[in-house]
Amino acid sequence: MLPQQRRLARAALGLPNAERTSYRNKHYTSGKGDYHDAWVALQLHGLAVLGTDDGLAVFRLTRAGARLALEASEKVREADFLGVADA
Image (cartoon, rainbow, N blue to C red; front, side, top):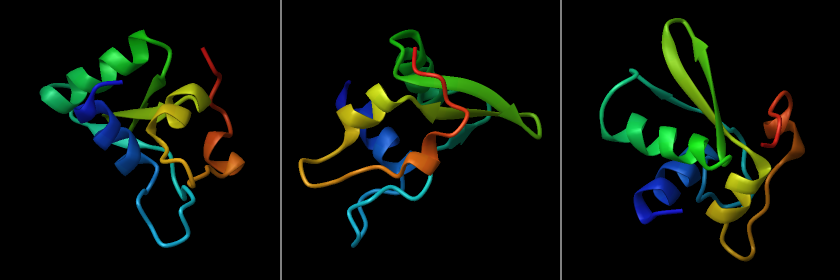
């Protein structure tokens, strides 16, 4: 995972925060641009999945993608991965 991808992944998880635990798992893009391209690369490596919501692309991390984004003392909530199939 490249540094830009890791920053995007952490933001998608709502990290950093005081609880050191994720509270979401999604990132919306317009379907073009650098952020979208970074997420597509994560998807191609099985680290994210792509869906749509109201015409926008919405990416969600797989558990494998989330693990790569976490700092050592951070964790994810299982509820953030409901409906996300690991690649």
